[in-house]
Length: 415
Image 1 (cartoon, rainbow, N blue to C red):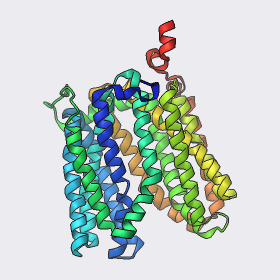
Image 2 (image 1 turned 60 degrees about the vertical axis):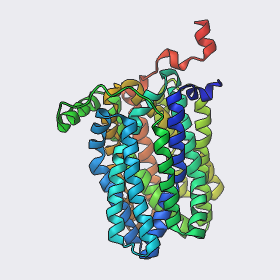
Image 3 (image 1 turned 90 degrees about the vertical axis):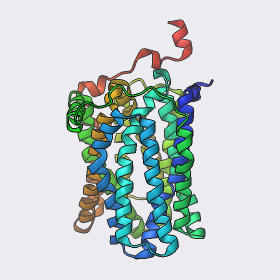
Image 4 (image 1 turned 135 degrees about the vertical axis):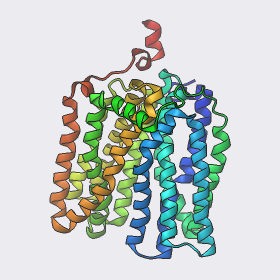
């Protein structure tokens, strides 16, 4: 089998990949469908923020417990159980919309349920991938999953927009629930050995073990601490200030902003293809250099947001972000014991999630009290500086990978 698709040799990965692809494709419609569902009920941005914040806060509250459970129970079973919860919560939203009984408080409540379910799915997802394939195929497996994710990021919103505009947001919810329903029996075909740790200790004891594993690795907590600031900048500068600039600057415009975001997705997509074939020998060194490239479009957005120039910079940033994403996953999966991986991943996720609402609030305030160009240029400098300073930590700079997984078959035959 060609190198880029080598992970498909592994039966368990094939079934997991199919289930994950189905849920990513159908799930790509959810955010747009939910947004328009909320706005149909109450055309107020504050109502939408309440619903989205409810999901995020629920995710933050439960993600550490999700990591513990994912290290105790069969991870595929956890994902299936959470998909059942998602079907019920998403189906309830669709039913409320169809019957005209949907209210903002009910959508907030169902978003809390959905956020809690996602908090259990994500650590299980992170922990299950090394169980599905061999170490030699781990990079290809991660790249293939990223390829589908980036493809639906580009195409999913278009399909969702068409479906919501023609049939309404409730039908988009039905499609998502149907995707989850198909994925459950597909995941049942994944056959893995039972987890080695099945309980006998308290949940808080397991959390302490996970924290000990997390804090004992300087490369791990260094990068997570860096991203607590970098993610706040990303969500604020790109997610809040970006649309504001697009709406109020004729050089960019709303249509131009759409092209910029598509270019970013295209950069991710191209890099996933390259990473299917070319081994990433220094996952954190190249990853942190790659992610630092995001400072380029942020700075250009503030200085001269011309569509073509900004789209080119966003393309580079998207490619760099995928180098980091794949490198980070490999660093985690190859250096943390599998029976503790979900707990350690949950601490990483907590650090990422908790700053998102903070970054949104900070930049929402900054954009009304300071010059947007100054905010964005400063953000770009700070972002790149933090990313590159992590390279001064020896374990970040030096981390390599096992020789067997970075050599081509021909190199292995010659050695």
